[in-house]
Image (cartoon, rainbow, N blue to C red; front, side, top):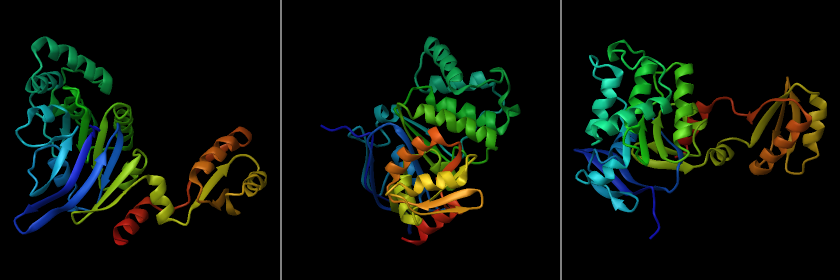
Length: 306
């Protein structure tokens, strides 16, 4: 039987007269970073809680490795690490004591706890004193500590609700790097209302709108639908020479210089990536990317188009 990491099948969740999720279906089969985005009240947190067995669906099913998720299946719960948006910490504990308590709640013995806490602290890169009282931790330090806590039982799947929100750019990048590393051998599904968080990290993006899954696609594919297939290159080399190089490629059209950039169009994204790699051998490429004014505008177009 084929194994699936996560399979969501016609998932519907009602709260009295409000439908939070409406027949949502998707499958995630392999490790990687997967992003869930949508406007406020789109159903993101409800979906993550249903996958994590914290909410019971009104209709439909969720499966982890072909086993149905329910609130009583502790084996399935042990495969999931869930970090809610409003996760709290015990302010009077030290960071080390908090992790030991969380490890104990996951069923680790005293000897196992000590070893595992040390492993996770090193993995996450916690560099503040483990004896520091939680109350005195910064926002970034608290978020690292919480992230470490959901790794203690070595889950196969991480579910993170707004894990990057409220962080300064340095802390945001630090946590993003840890998420990338973790996604090498685990499924990491996380939500955000900020498209740039999702876009820079994820190989696949899910968009919710009023409980409906309106997009399930790769970032490059979304770009090709939401833009005019326009890209830009900036280079420290001669712009005219770089322009001539691009004009010789039969899958690239409308090459022009605009300011200190070269703007062009193509639908062949894979060929383009190969071409850019070759160009970097001849030209000093400063930057390259989709020629879109704002990622948030893409998000607005995605939502309004459905």
